[in-house]
Picture (cartoon, helix red, strand yellow):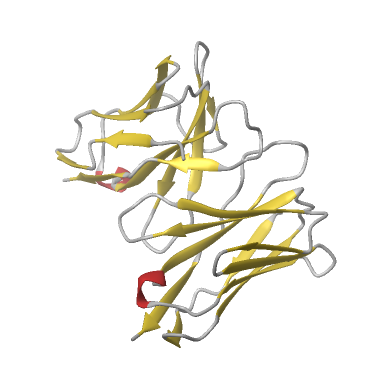
Length: 113
Length: 117
């Protein structure tokens, strides 16, 4: 069955450092993969989308990579700030043409001042 | 970006009662909306796809008679939890893709926290 793995342990980093979050998926061949941010008690907010033919995508301090061979996406936040503290969700699009993404459990990022 | 509004943001009800949650797209039309449920520290689980003008499509294991979905217009979908029980307590979130853009990017509501006593 299709599976999305994100590190369930919180990632603690110091302000100013680069945060790197990992998303691994199995039994998937997603056409694209999305990353969302979710704050406690709120709905997710879209951050970035990367397509299978793109190796890397950037948006301000965010960078996403997509390795379809490794079946992995990495999400980087450079020059992290305490305001970046949140849970980050990985969402590969399912195979078969459906555009409804399936979400991973998310990784909590805590940026310490 | 597109805005999706959800109401109420939280609700407490007695066991056996029904609760209605509304999801509105404020600045775009949404022929399709999605309803998710999320338990603490768990992933978003898709419950059903709401289609304007037709019946909702439910995911496997979701009781359609318990979770009634109505997509009354291009900007409103409602989820009614009928005869709610404590195990229905959860965080319910709706979302919609931006109209005319089939990239999969979803715009989410603020979520509704349901507590059934």
